[in-house]
Image (cartoon, rainbow, N blue to C red):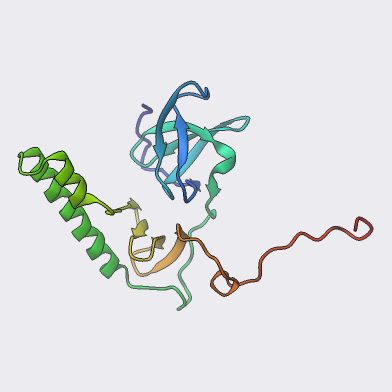
Length: 183
């Protein structure tokens, strides 16, 4: 376990959409718990292809640094009307989901639920939020995407849905074209 980061935790990367294996040390023989999809992390060290990351809760691990998704230096500004949204409804949904999870944990601890009932009650539940001062990254489970908020509005930040058509992607598929003379 790595010590908790200070108040300056700033995500530099996001875990890929399918999660990521992790290790206690830059040694394939020492695996640990895999990282959740789209988890914001801070890359603090590189050793070849290995990357040492920290999570907002202070937990650290080593990963294949080549697979991390870099986040923009500055979060989206949110100045345009497209994609802008009031953060309060999403905050209310996340707050309710967290309350539901907490209730299930309390019932499990009190013996009112067994492990299978707890599993059934929490199946499909996904909650994610990182708050750093006025900046907020919050997971929208309905839309399967992370949103960035500045207290006034939200903008899409990253999605774990696969974009399958050019209309949804906003552009045609990227093609490799050989330089002139190499065709």
